Length: 228
Image 1 (tube, helix red, strand yellow):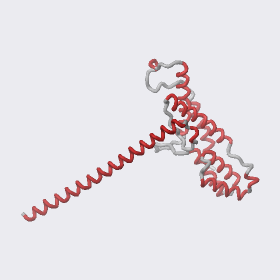
Image 2 (image 1 turned 90 degrees about the vertical axis):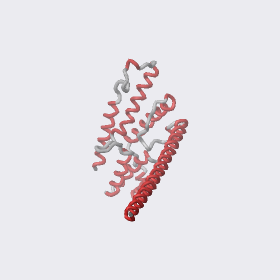
Image 3 (image 1 turned 120 degrees about the horizontal axis):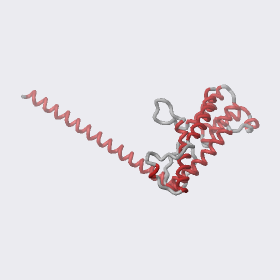
Image 4 (image 1 turned 45 degrees about the horizontal axis):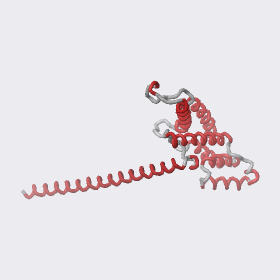
């Protein structure tokens, strides 16, 4: 299956991408002579930048030609497609493996849990219980969550911004204070979006009324010309 080959290439590319992050500190455009930090801050800045770069590989590897935005949940989606492909070929052993692997990312996904229950019923619970999620993915998730915890901690304590590239990150990874801050920011953004939407509707209504008035005025002028 092409998806299986794509997964192998994905993890190879991920390793290469992460290795490129282990370079010298990037001073982000300003002269390094202006960088003034003690040893502790310098180590923190460098390590956080490296971890943020490694997390950025998720988006980097999910880009497609012609797209300006990374494909959401690119890695988990492979296992969604694979479990369905194995189901179509009646390879229930592999279908269970891929379904269980997908559930490592989204353990509460209702459809996938239903699919898994069906595969287990077909193959038999005794045999299905011996099938585990892919170890490479378990290791990948454990490493990713540890990095996220450190990056969210740096965001919370040092104010070093971090944008999580994944939607599957468990809530407990994000510090409570930061969760509350992000909630307020989301609510503020939603309110601003709503206000802009309402304003645009008002502008559209005013434009329509002005156009209607202009059309009626033009009609009145034409009728007056005929009478003359």
